[in-house]
Length: 409
Image (cartoon, rainbow, N blue to C red):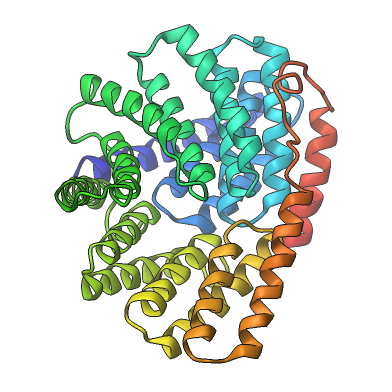
């Protein structure tokens, strides 16, 4: 109920603020910050089309009368929304400008600069630039820890972001020491400072569960493996319960928790339960995000993996893999990291069904993917580039984005 009350409170505040603006309209107040907060309210409850609409309005309203701090906030809010509505170029342009504005206005050791770096890291992670994301998140953690120490909620969030990005990056290598260290710092702070029903417990517990699940498969002792998987299950269930209570069933975060439980149940050999969880995740994601979103592709690939490797339901797995690949190629191109798992899945599927020609088709695509990844492995972001502002005018940045908005509508 606390989440519902907060939602109604935010909506009421927005209405009252608009009434105030209308009363003093002759003073020509800039409504961009108000529209950006309304956009973000819709974003938090997974109402993405409305979030996108209000983000467009915020940027259209934004002009030189707005202060630099307010401008940075508008850019950060709208960038995060555009990531979820697949306007990747728009999102990256806005958050890069926000980072440069924050660095120039506040300096390199300021909490707003650190917060803006975290939003930039979020953008890079969703653009599949995980190496660059790690550089940005690491810098944000160092600034935040220096300013607040390791017993502050800002530090907890910064360490959690870095832990998750490290988990994503290290997944292919099977090494989770770095991600676990940051996850444990975040989890310790949240446990110490927040009530047990706070939503941050859901994300820190989820992350720790993901890492424990992977660590379980490194154990030769069946009892140790079972203990870690059981702990991961308890953490996932706790996260899901919190998320459903605060955000509701029809929310992307809830869908992610269903998907995580699906993967865990698959690892535990609970295939019917895993299928049920994956299907719930797919239904919610497709309902909220549409049929061409990376989050949906991820869940399609997870269900395909269950059918392919465990249930031997190859005819059911095939269309899921193909749809996941289609979405990934359309959104990110042939070098997208997640394609590796779909290509390997299809190779396994075609080998199991004795379809040699199709097997070698995806074997060749995997080799091409490896070549592309090697060619694009160099970092585009480094600590030096984040320490010197590269300012374009806000007018110049917005002109390009507004043109894109008008084309889109």
